[in-house]
Amino acid sequence: MSDDGGLWLLALGPAGATGLYWMLYRYYRNTDKSHAFERETDVQAQAVTGADSDRKIDEIKGTRETRISGDNVHAYRNRVKRIRTDSS
Amino acid sequence: MSNNSKLPPVPPAAPTGPGSPRDVPPAPGSFPIDPATLPEPIRDELLAPDPVAIDTASEELKDGLNHCPKCGATDIRQRPGTDLLICRFCRHEWHGQRVEEEFGLGEGLDKLSGTIIASGARDIAADAVNLMSFKCSGCGAEVTINTENAMTARCHWCRHVLGVNEQIANGAVPDAVLPFHIKKDDAVARIRQFVDKRRLFALKEFKEQFTPENVSGVYLPYMIVDGRASADVAGRGEIKTREYTRGSGNDKKTYYDADIYQVQRHVDFTVDDLPLESSAARGNLDTRTNTNNIINTILPFDTKNAVKWNASYLSGFNSEKRDQNVEELRPELEDQLLSVARCQVESSVSRFDRGVRWEQESLDVHGTRWVSMYLPVWLYSYHQPGKNGGMLHYIAVNGRTGETMGSIPVQQWKLLTAAITVGTFLEAIAIWIIGSTS
Image (cartoon, rainbow over all chains, first blue to last red; front, side, top):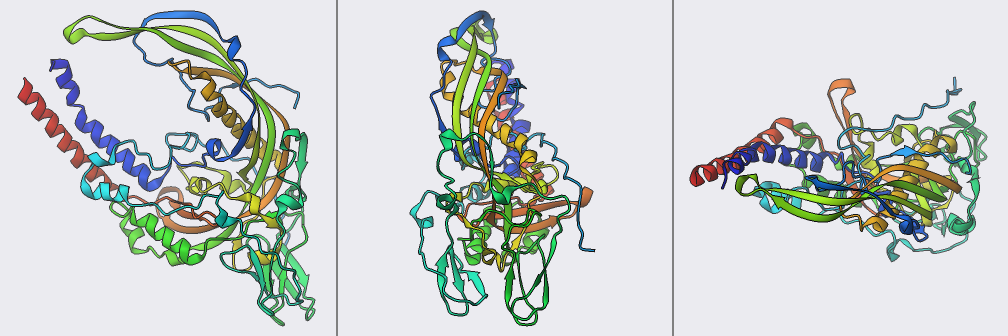
């Protein structure tokens, strides 16, 4: 056990208290719930296209981040810049 | 006096903030902390069974006796727990026509184009009034129905029941109605079960005043939308090429190398029966000021079983009126279609193991079909006094599937005490570990 690891352990109390508070608060108030229309609606989709045009544009070396910055692949409801088309 | 004409409603502000329904909801039954690690009283509450919800695809909801109406009496009600209408005079029962077959709503999704609006979903006339007067055909008396909250009334002279059956332009008459399947006793039991799982930290006043028998059946207005659309998304994805550690001992750090890709995806899809709140107040899901997200959560309904509008289904229940037109709901629809598209393309980018950052998206809606519908909800409410008028907490039971969701007011000091106690306990363990290893 290192000194650094030991100091990190001290955060366990406040982190546990905050985590438990938020978990129970949400369990009672259910503020994070809504209609999961993405998985509960009947969606018929054609095969997704575009995978063959993926192209490598750059590479990074020696980053300490485990994920790409701004990863939103699971955050379906976070809107990004909308490109308008006038054909509809 | 009865002229309640009003200005077009202002579109609700998009809900934001932590824990708001902008987040994709967690999978049912999932907890951020493993309940097994928590103190026993909390664990018992968390692990108690939830009220059972019927799968909408189940056989239980697909009943369909079909009798002919034979009797001229007007005292007609829905037979509780079924889709049947029963004449309380001669006891004849019959089944309303399902709109799915009647209007061909399940067909041609893949060829949908333009905007098709069913007659009950047409724009609300600006001069439409809520109060409607009828001349009772039995005795000639004038009977008034306030369509804001009811669609039937009994003539106070001859006891004929009058219902609003013709489509008036005030938005109160939908195309279809989905009758209640869950009976009141059942709804009360589900609400009780839901609350029993959440008693430990519930507000004292809430527990004292808890009377689930006061639950009321409400028909809430929705637009049921079918759509055909294509979406394009573009962004960057990363694939990990190398993982290594540098340094030794205390300075050991993990580093990654990755390739960056330009990613683009296109998907064509159709959605069937997407429900949208067509009342501006109900469609506002800002969890800081209301608990409408609770009612949103008990969606979806088995809207395939909806029957053609007949005011008799509503007798004995309350109803809320639609105040949103198709064009006002279109931004919400497009937002949901984009979310659906993003969900659909997710599996096609799984090779980017360091994730994808979508930067641009576009949606092309080829066709939509709008049907307005009254959907059945059992609502129990509790008003918690507080700042800005307090908070109205709902517990809602889906009147078809029995899916139950609710917002239980929290006794803050109790919850804080429990959190601090557990935190102190963890801290003591941490200090003990540090003390014993140094």
